[in-house]
Amino acid sequence: MSDVLDLTCDLIRRASVTPADEGCQAVIAQRLGAAGFTCEHLRFGEVDNLWATHGDAASGPTLVLLGHTDVVPPGPREAWASDPFAPEVRDGVLYGRGAADMKGSVAAFVLAAEQFVRAHPRHAGRIAVLLTSDEEGDAIDGVRKVADLFRARGERIDWCVTGEPSSTRVLGDLLRVGRRGSLSATLTVRGVQGHVAYPEKARNPIHQALPALAALTARRWDDGYESFPPTSLQVSNVHAGTGANNVIPGELQVLFNLRYNPTWSADALVAECESILAAHGLDANGPDCSIHWHRSGEPFYTPEGPLRAAARDVLAAFAGAAPEESTGGGTSDARFIAPLGAHCIEIGPVNASIHKVDEHVRVADLERLPDLYRALIERLLA
Image (tube, rainbow, N blue to C red; front, top):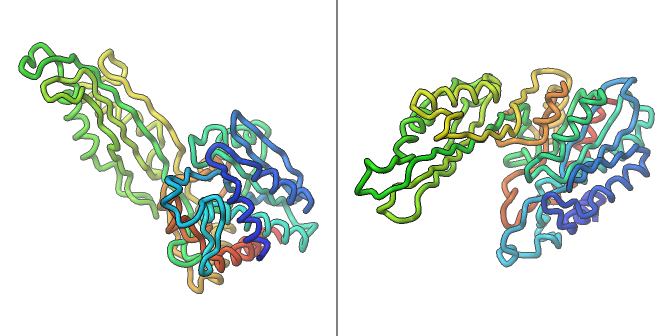
């Protein structure tokens, strides 16, 4: 068994469902400490974070390898062909929760970092590994909180490589150079409950909200931004009523989310949405309406520069062709590192099975991943 496969299997055996880490970071810290890294454990609430560094930030740029040790719940165990927390290789494929998202990448980071400092003990700048156990959950006490700490103590990060599973068909065929922002809302409209036969004695919150919701969903927010698609608003849940067909509900709750490009900021979108609501009779600060906003993270975009150029060349060598450069997908913890001034990219294994039953990664891809990351590190710091 190869070193990266062995370490990945060790991590998978640890059922680190968010926010549990189950000792993953302790195993990694022990290895990186033995390789000469300085390891700092940062625990906030129930979340474990690891910051491991090698080198001197004063002597050159800081390159961070960013990952997470937590995983999503496996779902029904009986639906899996094998125990999700008992890694198993079948026909050249490793199965287990976290194999692709993202314990395989974390293991590859560790191997690449160890190999790099062994070969270049006096390398320029600083290489760092940053891990959290709160990426798949609320992401409050993970990298978000670590970034706040870094900001307070003046920690400089120049480049960040996140190991999220980004490849689509073969390892290295996609380079993620940005992500959209995410803004969620819970809209509550309060009416007056009553009998449907006597609407004059009630006030239907569904009827009150429909014009505003129609306006929000019909609005064209923008035409995209460079490689970003247009901003999108999607209503994800609508709830009202008692379940009876003869009762006008007294309250309506609507959940919606905006995925937005750098044309917008969260504050600008909040103001625009509340303006549309107000124009249709829903005052977000009034007695009959309220709205709660959750800012998951602003969009980020890495322009042309040393990081993007080096990644493009390395991935082309590994995949046999230049990678697609994309800003698609959901969100990642890079959204918290980018505001520190870092250029951020994402490179990882094929994402076809992430969060699914029988999550898996090809062993051949896993065993190439440390070489890919090490090649990128050497292009930037050697």
